[in-house]
Length: 451
Image (tube, rainbow, N blue to C red):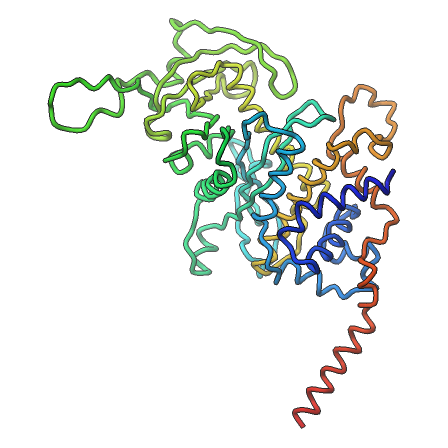
């Protein structure tokens, strides 16, 4: 069974990564990917070579050049992976995506793109914690998989955010995270031209930079400020013959926080499946415009009462005013899959472990890890989850576990790769000794010519 699973994994990589790589580049990628999956500690290119026992047969420089001097683009590979996601897992005619950012902590005075960023995981409302590292803005596809009940986020597009200080030092224009997010969204819209796109994003990405001039087929599900200025739709244009443009906004409405505190508007209730649990939600809803952030679109606004936490209520909205409250809340809750991806990719797959310093390498290593994560989930969902290599270890104290997680996916991949010589047989002769002899002969020839 490991042989057939390995064959299917190799075939999947051929289909998704091979179109964006040269043949030697793809051979190097297979070695790096296999070693990356088999590594248990800190992930690095050299550690991948040691794990796959390639270090004694091939020079490490060829694998470093794969990132620093390669001609491939993560966006191209991400597009192929997206189409494989739609073929394997399906999207019901709707492409559901999520955009968010994450911090990969690292240090080094010569590392490209490094800066001091707010660490949202360790920060609180009273104390802000900053950390040096790389901040990645990520677009992921939200899917359902047959081996788990929760929604999964499979990343396909990445952009590196650089601070104002770092951009000034290098003499380049600074771009905000929201601008990078809009770039990702525009690129994804070029991929998907024939279906509805549902985007879930938190309040940091619900502003005019992201929402301005969006295609009508893009429906945003987001979070709203409690003190947002909302208005009625503009009244119908009267044929009065008066000069001037028609109104874009109607009368001013009460702010969401005022509506939430107003006892005259009763709370209603509905049931929804949020974060894997069926809960009863108390809400108030209305249709209005949020002109400052979403221009003249008519929104369905949902004010939700919370039973715990520092915030007594939260406000959500949807570009599609015809949707019911349950659909809006469940779609927005689906964005939590990208937070799970960030945690698993960092803890299990070395998303933030790279020691790359050069620009090209920095812009490729982390996206490659994210794309590798997506292909592993696709491979597992195509039938590997039903095979013996997907069997999780026996834990008598964890008998209530339902479904499989990414740790089980990674364990199955390691079982399939265990003991396999991943190096292409025709390139075994390129060992260290012959490389040294050839470089010595080149130097001697150059000296003879110079003499």
